[in-house]
Amino acid sequence: MAGLLLIGTGGTIAATATDTQRLTDYQVTQGIDAMLAAIPGATDIAQVHCEQLFNIDSRALRTSQVIRLARRVRQAADDPAVDGIVITHGTDSLEETAFFLHLTIDTPKPVVLVGAMRPASAPSADGPLNLLNALRVANATDSCERGVLVVMNDSILAGRWAAKSHTTRVDAFGADGLGILGNVCDGAVHYALRPDPRRQPVLPLAGLRSLPMVDIIHDYQDAPLHAYQAAIQAGARGIVVAGMGNGSLSTAAERGCAQAVRKGLVCVRASRVPRGTVTPKASDPGLGLLAAHHLNPLQARILLRVALAHGWTPQAIAQLLADQ
Ligand code: ASP
Image (cartoon, rainbow, N blue to C red; front, side, top):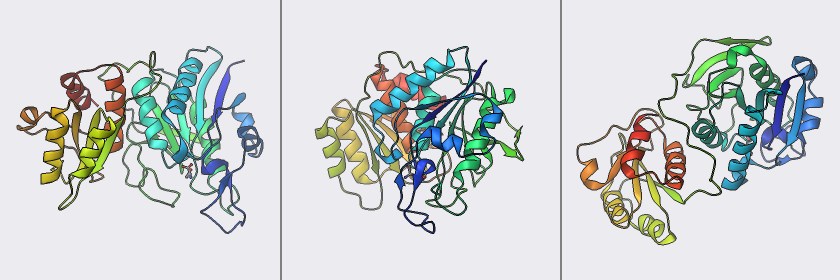
């Protein structure tokens, strides 16, 4: 019988604190089998096969582990015995994994990331219901062909658009409505939106063992130049500037990028502002700069790393950024 694959990677959803009143400062303690077993009704949804890929805070995830996770998802998506995949994940870097999977995995089957903002020991832990909802979403035929999904706090979000926007609240993802495709209520999965079909082919996982270094440099008034020089010296292949407003650069950022471009790095103008697009400027091509368009600095960095790993030219990367 077909069923769901539940991959555990750790995070707050798998964590407990020493004191039940404590909602921060906790440790990952729970395995994925125990987490599933503790949720009444979870295994009535579908046959669930658990796999513990790792069990750590998402702040500690390394690129090699994210690539390993993506390979496992790719393999499971090709397996006729798997109808859908759920990944438990720390919320701190969940959006980075979601965007990496969005770029590299193309499957009609549901791929759902889920986390929690409160540890399992909290009086109103959000993990059990989030996980139950994620299993329901992964098991729903209506979730097919919607790309990588994130389920948190009753909302179903597009992994392409998911971003954490609060440090501790349970509505840390999607509270501003950005990226919400639907919701889960009383166990029923409802969709209002379907993401546009991707305009770009997936970036293959084949051949990816590691990814080149790309730094994000935050820009601000009277910023110094040394961060750019350090990135160049450290061997970065690209720099994403989290610039001001519509990707405006301070004098140091302009000079730093000019030095980096001369050394062969690819430089992207993104924005430190959480919402909105960074539009291309007439001066960009002459300066060797690329606009991040609709991608935030974290997403632009991931795209740049994967594209550089595949040997894409700056011109091709410019188009890839524009098409996201
Ligand atoms: N420390 C956690 C993490 O692994 C935070 C969370 O999951 O909410 O990202």
